[in-house]
Image 1 (tube, rainbow, N blue to C red):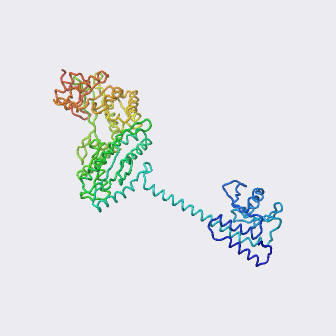
Image 2: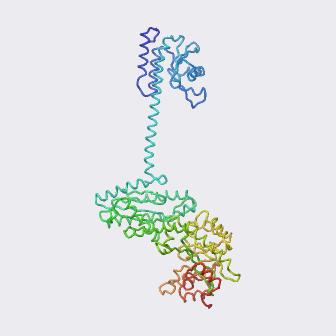
Image 3: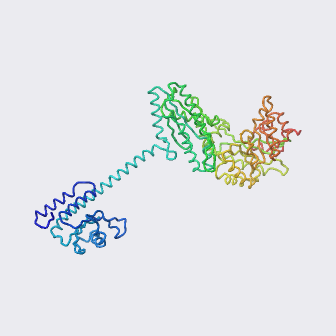
Length: 616
């Protein structure tokens, strides 16, 4: 029934019925539809419309029809009029309802808490003033309920988003973003659980610590983007080798760990299973990884710790991880691309390594290192060159052999600082020595050993050229000495660097020739004129059980054909010296002639033109 009277009882009844129609539903559209349908019926309206302002839209377009009963014909034909009516409320120009005449119909607009308006259309009749006023608190209640429903909807939406974000965050907190493997945080929890299970159920597990050999070289020479792709490829390969129940984690940089769960009730069985898995890991990583134009070869060093163990330092996750890490460093020391099981004696070595690394860092900063030079002589015994060698005597540690501290430096970033220190000091001495040579001297160069990490630096050519250019000697007075492993990762890029330096009259000397499997395959491509035959050939020179002399003779013939001069390392006997004198080698180096000596001793020998052996 449509209300047409204005007595107080009827108005209160109308008001109560409409307030009940507001209801308690939190579904905004459902609640608005119920109210508008009831209002349409009780007031005998032609139509009723709810508009909301969308402030992200410009001007008139900001007025958006939310709901219309029975249709939106009024909105389509008279939108500008309605917009002006509701703008009156939006601009707070006074009043809470406004009436306009559209065609033959009266349109009554109510303010909707300044966020929009409710439009009531009555056909060919007017709204009674008393009803207009009666509807004011009802519309206000409806607007408040609309705000509440929309707020609740937004809060629910935000809660869902937050819950989803929380789940995503929790997942990301457990995952390495690059490889999507479980990360270090998840690893610690998983290892503790596996150790606990092994102790409770009386079986063994194992932790494999996998470090990629020379991975830093990939990042330094090819860039971190290639390095990242390589890591994802390695992760995928490791996952293919994982047994059911085992888990692979990435715990940092190029470091992966592999928890082997329940691998036997006896320790011998556990060791056997761990060996099998480690071998499979080495085999699967042996295949080249193709990334664009690059074919990369990567090898792992693997340390294995079986748990529970019988050592005194406990079976917690920290100790087991440290055991596996220590065993991994032993694998690197033993030649890499292999695995080692932890044993307690390794603790002593690991602690010593940390002490040496700490002291070496200070030694580089405090100039505690010193250089010696081993002369190279020609067939007549004249000193024609010298190789610079690094030495270190520490007050607490005593004399540390170069192989030991250089290997430690190579496993850390110290090798770059050490290489820079050596290059600077050798060039400084080379300039001093050159200034003292007379024009008749046959002394022609000092060589500097170049580390693989140093060579593959992107700015290697620029940095080494600057240091040598600042030297008080011609660039040709310095030779850069490197071993084959410097070249193997990217032979083309290596040759390009060598040619760039050759343009600046800076030349190379290939050291330890003959020990690498690929020497002959690239020798003819290298811009070098000097190589050193590895001393291992000379040590076994007179053994009756090998063909060392035949190999050396073949190298001498080949290099002569290629126009490359040979230097022989490790000459310690008269017979060896006589043999190579007769062969007419470019130079000989070894204890038979001279041991490494300080710079002042070399300067004195060169200045006096001392002859090491009598001419043949």
